[in-house]
Amino acid sequence: MKMKSKDYYGAILLFLILSISSCRSQNSESSENITDLQNNIGDASVVVNLLGSEFSDSDGNNPQASTNKLLKNQPSTETFYTLTSPSTLLAAEVSVENSIPINTSAGISPVAVIVGPPLDLNHKFRLIAYRDSDGGYAGYKDFTVGTPNTNGGLRLPKNVAYKMVVYSYGTNYLPNITASEMTSFNLAIHNYDSMGNSQNGFLYFVQSFTPVEGDNTLPSVILRHKIAQVTTKINSSALPAGSNNITAVSSAILTGHNRKAEFKFSEPFIKNRSMPENVTTTFGPQSPSTEWISNPVFINAESSPETNKIISFTANVTVGGVSKPITVTNGFRIKPGFLTTYKIKLKEVRCGAILNGTFREFMCYNLGATENGKPFEPAKEIHGAKYQWGQFPVITQLQDQSASTFYHQAGSGWSFSDFTSIIFQDPCTANNSDYRLPTRDEWGNIIISNSKQTVGTWGNDPFNTGIQHANYGSGLKIGDFLMLPTAGDRSYNSNNSTTTIRNRGINGGYWSSTYDSNNNTNSHHMVIATNGAFVSSTFRSIGMSVRCMKK
Image (cartoon, rainbow, N blue to C red; front, side, top):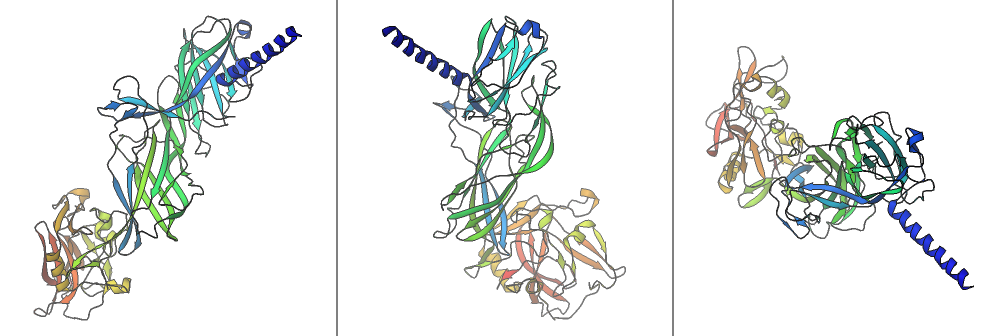
């Protein structure tokens, strides 16, 4: 009886030991492909002790490490604007969240790793062996985490040195092995395909290993991510209190991902990316709060140079019961193998300036401009159209920028002579009844009531793109929330019905609603220049910019 009891408990102990060994090695009963069968059978069997995964991390400069921390050189914060009304912007301030613990090796190292999650039950991974001597392919075996293995590991000739490659998509999906992998190690290529699944990453490990006769375990395998993983946080705490809780995030899209790529086993990077496609990122059901966090997604892309921001983000965020669109164009930079959390902090910005001691709203863009999400940065997209005083016919932004001399077709309504009519039709009110042109005195008071700062590079560039006066990169910032680009103006030639651009990049003219009572062909306007701004008077037939003020 005692002997039976000992045998019984001994059997239990042996069973537990075998079970623990099976879990740590993460074996599976799955497909295997063994070359040179006569030599392989009965020699060596190799399984994998898969410990987990890790992401790369580097600050690209001179890191300073302390206990489990690495100071990173983060990209600067950048703000993107979405127009929610003609004079109101939803500002999305994008920054990299710097709160991830970094695990470093001894001392200070410019490259560290972030511990990633382990592979879950039913996740698949593949072991491929290549001979060290000639790089030749020797065999492969697929494993499934949590599935007990009944027929051993990858069988190979004993006492032969191999390059052991282990890879996984980090999911329960693993593509069939291909001929491009069953070649020599130096030529072997895996053709990655995310299959439209943002959870399909690519994790990789390679190590030299010489198995002996019998059972062998490839020790301490930690798979390194080769594709970037991105998490997005949206924070609304800076919006007006009491109505700033986020209750939903929908239609969240990351643009810039590539479905396919090649990974050469003998090189540490992915190349030949192809098939661009959008990635949907979900925020899932969360309690109303001022910060929502997305599920992480893999993005197969690479910023080159690495400071380039190439990934865009769009979403509809419901805050205080109101759906607000967010557009971040080329706002994320991507480095393969990095785990990055981008934080988007929402703020409300009203465009305008101080007038007679009170903040007055202005349209954020010139009339006829493209709403490019950057109303405070000079660019050709925001110059807008050109208007004669009190008239509706315009030279559109596209026409204005297509040639230095623009020929008009008959009947366009543009006047090619000085006109004395003081009948004023407000292009602002015609566009939106809540807005109007400022008067001469209002422009004058705005000039003296606000700080003024030149923005961008000023100057006349007569050779850029073959078009005269093609410097679009300058403007004048009035106060903190009104930027007027130096769009120049359009003079006319009555002999051949043409207009010619003047002074773009040097100054800009902005019409007022006030005609000049001392000159029957003139009206007043504001001029912006490198030395500030002033009110002047000129021919009503000159084509100028229009910036509208809220009534």
